[in-house]
Amino acid sequence: MYFDTHVHLNSEQLYEDHDVFIQRALVNQVTNMVVVGFDLASSKKAMELASKYDFIYAAVAIGPNDCADITKEDMNIIDQYLNDPNVVAVGETGLDYYWDYVSKEKQQLVFSWHIELSQKYNKPVIIHCRDAYEDTYQMLKRYGHHGIMHCYSGSAEMAKRFIEIGFYISLAGPVTFKNAKVPKDVAATIDINKLLIETDCPYLAPHPKRGKLNEPANVVYIAQEIAKLKNMEIENVARKTTFNAKKAFGIK
Image 1: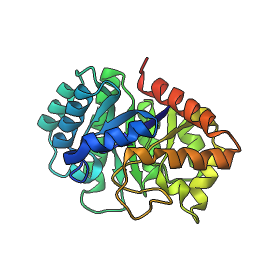
Image 2: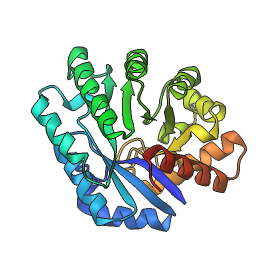
Image 3: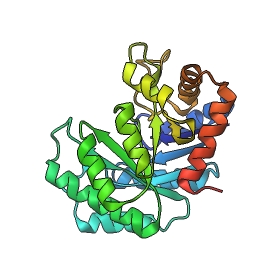
Image 4: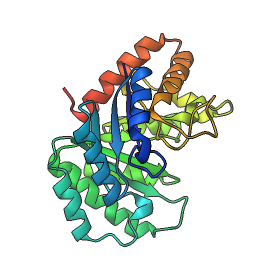
């Protein structure tokens, strides 16, 4: 019933007990999820999990905060991973100007490599963007590729610009935070046909689980908040966002 479009069951916090978290998600009617890589090791784990469960899919990439020493040889490994039929997207990739682990120039170079792979395999690109919305937009517009704005934290106006160039807007735990005016405005404003839901677990646990370890079962809270903000039945939010996710990832 629910499709969590961005989980890190491949993370140190969740991987050892991933079976427990998966079973708890199924009890909460989370029937699909995408495990998203952020470096070579986590991308490989994402693929392993996707091969183990037929309702789990993988995304592979080297994220902007992990790309300081990345070379074309590393990208060749991602290229090989993309031949796996369980890999439905390139991600997460993008730009993160909040941290200064990696220069903007190197981030943009590695980001461009990922977009090129997305185009090569015609798979959506999952975008990590923090404090870099305009640069991210301009790069995506230049390449003309489609995908998902993961854990979106920008304005509703910016979201509409991303939608115009072929992107879905994915909302995570922050939309449930009591004083989170901007993500609530996005949820209320953006057409349900362009919205996705995610946990980004183990990070950003939604209210009322805030401060605790996040897990896929909690995606229900994000759907509940969107339903409230849009004055919709939660079943309709679940149905629509699941349909959107399958369309975005090319899942039949």
